[in-house]
Image 1 (cartoon, rainbow, N blue to C red):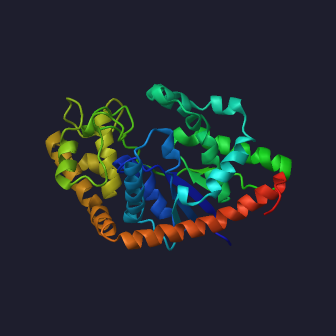
Image 2: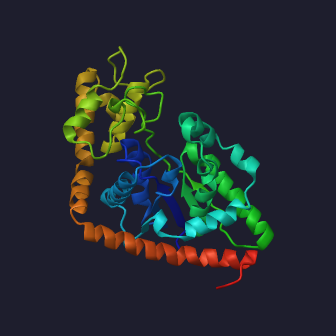
Image 3: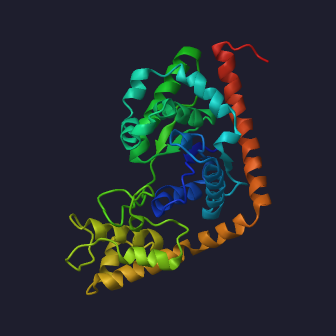
Length: 330
């Protein structure tokens, strides 16, 4: 039986955080044996926020190297850079003509990002869910790994696919969300009621997967907890719950085992162990990333090959779309 297809993408907006890794990238790696996976560095999406050209170039290459460093295998998966595959921009226009203004007006991320960047509320920020729908539909994806903040965009992609199929027949696979059984939701170290984010003004609130060991330990030690000095997972202990979740994700221990391990210990000992375990678990990624960044020729070979594979798949979909809507063949 043919493997099902999974598509996912991540923006190159600086080094990935621990939240990106435990919440998404770790799953990308584990999915490669069971599914045909297409993974993209979504540098076109990054343009909705003003970018410096040299920074975007560097961040795109760094993000691609990190993708390989965490374990995405370019021989098993199609790993590519979005702007290298022209079909994304071309399908975006067609799908824009099959998406209603009212649908885009209801996107909560547009409202949130407009509030955060009032000086640059551009048309791309409004229409980028259509580009995201095209990203998915080009590869006839069966599943898309999604977090809570992307559910609305996946639903739009499904609506567009169903609308198009309703007019022209069976053109697009209608994608479903892929929800891993257990995904570590990593919260801010300084405000554990919020998700960890590299856009946070306080650098102590997040850990990147390339932070050196001493920085990781220092940030964990400064993490907000509570005055109870009891390592236990329960409501009202957001800071401790967050650290326990991180420790569980990197050691494989259950919350019950962690509670037993630190019975009678204070937070100082607990935080030291969490910091050490986390730093050690990220060490192979840091080392692999350093090797890859020294071998630019290999990285270029991988992303060019990824672009060729991605173009081969996506062009077939685009050709079908162009024929259905009545574009004259070249």
